Image (cartoon, rainbow, N blue to C red; front, side, top):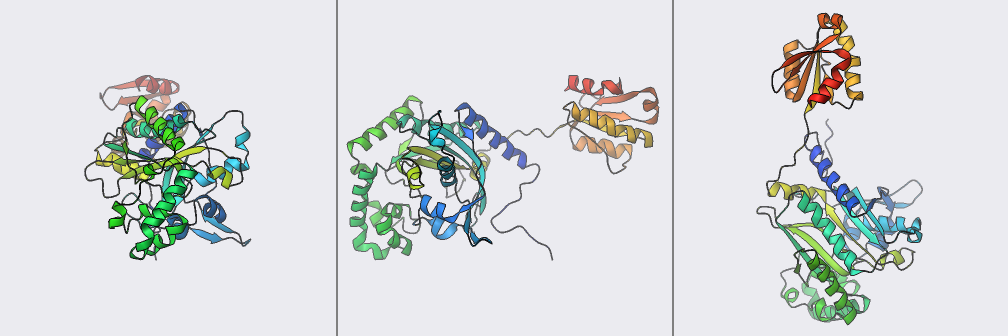
Length: 422
């Protein structure tokens, strides 16, 4: 009986994995340019971290987490998102005491959520995320948004739509929360059970419900923009001004909310408008979460971040017809004929690789013609042919596969010759 891959997961094979390496490399390069440092957190954490950090009213905590009890009777959960673990690490390692503030971090890590698999959405998926912790400057909100846009644009995406909103400060959110409860409560029985449970806990999340999005009360729900105090208005204005100064176009959507409980002030999503991309257009999203560090036992620390799905980024590239150029060519393929030549080819291949030259040889005892076919299949730039006669003279025949030109080269000079011809 064969064993297949678990539902909602995917093997990334050679030929495709190179595309992942390109986008991961771009994310790392842009992060370094913006002075963000990489952090790596454990694949699993104590379940309480996500219940407290993400919010027990969220779909993630209620329905999607992979939770298990270990042999010590501890409840642990596979990481469903990156912000709570990074914040836990920030508090536990006392990063708030570091001299360089704000602390600017990025991660590229697998996440795990039990949800219905569909295009670009898996039960194990990879997120690139940013967390800027320790600054209440609206300009850093714009910086975080700019970083995400830069990654997309430098990979070639053009059909992007940035949507922003503000959730206001605690005072503004409370006023908006009271208004939402008053708006939905008289007819809350018409909504799904999740929305009914959220009414008093977090009514803002009713606006994010997929089941009831077409309900008429959704269209007339009070907007957060109507309940912003002066401080929240000014903050949002400064974020917009910073985006304007960077020539980053955006659309304001007062109905935009994020699915996690810890957000306040700035919230944003970046969407693909590519034709045929699919019904779920969101590529990434994020926002400000000023209270999370404090909730996890640290000092009051204003913070902002985003998370970007690499699977959905690959789909967006495909939808826009963008091909990522991967380097699959081999520099040199060594063809050896005869027992002594085959023995010598081992040290020749080792010398080539030590010189930084991508190279390979036959390990299946193929005939010369079949070895040349293998070199063609691997797109080798040069083929180095070594027979018993060449070995006795200390030379090797090197063929340029593009020009067809062939030249005798001393064996000890092969690496230099190939490097010069690359």
